[in-house]
Amino acid sequence: MATGWARDGAVQDQIDASIADAVERARSHLPVGESLTHCEECGNDIPEARRQAIAGVRLCVSCQQEIDEHRASQGGINRRGSKDSQLR
Image 1 (spheres, rainbow, N blue to C red):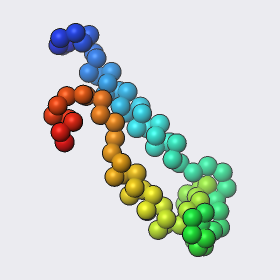
Image 2: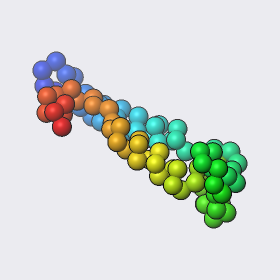
Image 3: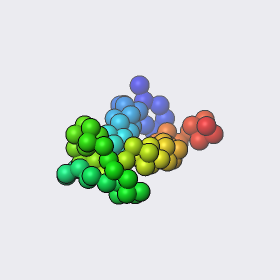
Image 4: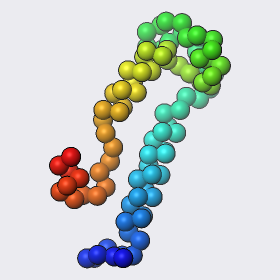
C-alpha cells in the first residue's frame, strides 16, 4: 500500500537498502590477511588463541573493544526522514 507520492514497495525497498548497507559496513570491518602477533595500537601481545580464532586479527581485545564502543556510539543512518525518527 503506497501513501502519498510513494510507489508500491517503497518502504520495503528502504528496509532492504538499510540492511544491505549495514551488512556491507560490517563486512568492511572484518580483518583480512595474516594475524599479527602484537597489537597495532598498543603493541601488547595478541594471544595465540585469539589469532587462531579470528583470521587477520590486528588488535588486542582491549583496543578492539574501544573501537567497537566508539562505532556503536556513532549510530546508524536515518532513512525514514520523519519527525519522530529524528527526535529520537
